Length: 365
Image (cartoon, rainbow, N blue to C red):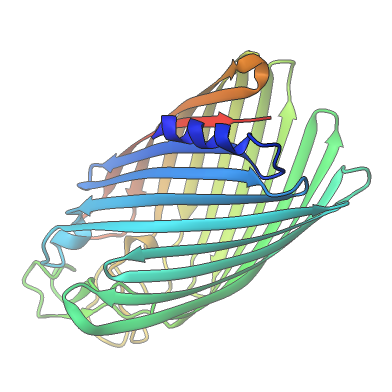
């Protein structure tokens, strides 16, 4: 695959045409956890300059997922194996101090289909020390259920993202982002069933089980702040904070810190730590004993429960210059682990997660 990418790039550089491939990357992401879930995601992306001020990028990935997690087992269903294919196309155009962009995403699974659209703009001010951004986001999804040709539900979302990035001095930069999104439609899982009575699982002797049912409408809001500062010639540090809340009653906080070391002029090593905590949705219960206490809504989704996590990861990148700087190969490896502590989810208290990503890219000047 990588020899094919190099050949495409070399061909794109021929003939004196303004259309030129400038970057191609290929990566493989692997995730496995102690809840018997495995995800493997190979990805390929290429970028090209259509003109001196217009760039196009195309990406494709396959998300292969297998699992026999507690969600599946306690719902008295068999293990699940699925594959998702996703195509991303983006275009950006620089016009003086303004940059306009657009992106389209198409994702398909055996029981799910999604279309996403993003339109954005950036404006540079104060000698490029200040950048204002606005993105409009929309998606349209179709939710199905394997083995049931008559089950089809829709989900729509629309939102906006505002951002401002500010260079403070020669060594520091900060960014603030606010995003709001409205979702309308089917937001439950067609495979999750909720026990009423018993110990909270359908695999036990619960009096009866009903399909998961959550509100059709949801307003989500996120405030995001991050900054980075060069500490010395070869060292830099960054920090991020994310606050999220919605009208389902969930609030979450995420704090991340990292430090990067330029080992050589061509290599970079970084270390990252992230802490995350959230409350549960107002209608979520670890156990439901009647049909009225939660307002008629029932969920068996761990993402709606209260939990916290610790993540630690490291990344190494190396750049190899070829052909007197006319071509560069970029290789990288990212490894990490996480500890997730579920505070009120029947059948699952803790999960250990291991993640690994391998990257190989090609760049032209």
